[in-house]
Length: 438
Image (cartoon, rainbow, N blue to C red; front, top):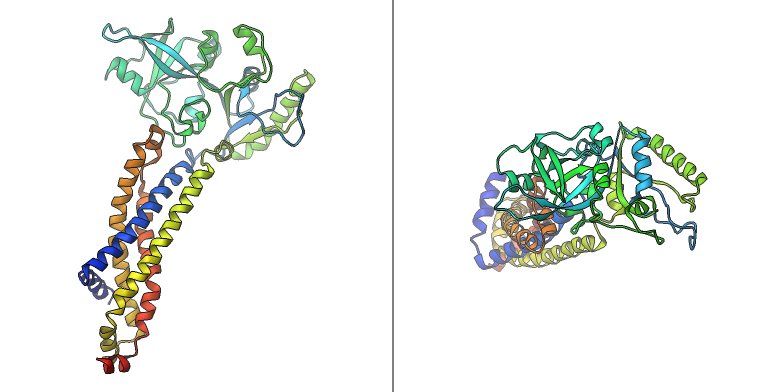
């Protein structure tokens, strides 16, 4: 009977086409608005590295001045000082660790047809690539020995490699950046992490910006005094000079630990607390504030990657869907009310209320499927318009299979919910009274 009722539902779409089109359009617009907003929220709030998000940690210690500090009001800075970063790197407190700071360099191409241009980069440790599953197209990361020596080596992003060398494998070649020669040891493949949790701070579009063009050893970036391209917080005046800046309490470096398993988190927390206690004995970290570890999901929450405005937009979109459902209920009531005579005849011929209910509910399901298909097209169009607004929105305004299935499920469920009252009303037709009125 389901197949028969489904065919009846398809045929019923041709009855009163204007009313049917209005129902389908109302449902499609409501579904498209809510799905487009929900898709963006889904992408923004997703786990960017689910297989190890509970093993990657950001350590934060409060090295602010004691003046004006009130216990209980602390919110640790989201970066660490150079001194703390170096101590963390040397501690071997976890399986892997990396310091990260953004920089920009002047790339001096060997090609005569290309002028000097500025490129964004990161100073990182060799563990960075394994920690964050960076895919290599050519070559590999530099060695721990290169880390220690601060060797002038570089890993290029694919865009920069294609720009400078085309399809040629550039591994082993040398390139000039900011007056220094660097040997290319690797080229990353296309790499998009959404949200880009490992480098939220200091980039124009935050967690939804493109990956940097090149990566150099952290110690090499420091030794060559590459300029900082990112956020820096200094709570007191510092003496002139680069070394004085390194020795200061300014926070400008992001740091990540990776433990062997999630169960190693208490041990890493104990290390962080012991480290802070030792530094207080040396006259630092005077606030004695709590030391914090954030895993990936906690870090995204701490950095408010999904803001309240995004959540509010999703609620407003669902409110609009409810409004569309109310209108659909009214349209279905009007559509089913003109079929009272048909229901009366079917009831007189022996059809039960349950059969009538099933027939009409399947018809509303057909409306939901058609509305879902149209809503999907409208959702794609809405996401395309949203993506045109900025580069950051381009990263999040795309639909995956989960949201594709959600669109159809939402459309059918919405139609079924909207059709419950009209269908119940249609089942209440009394055959004798309806036939007598005819």
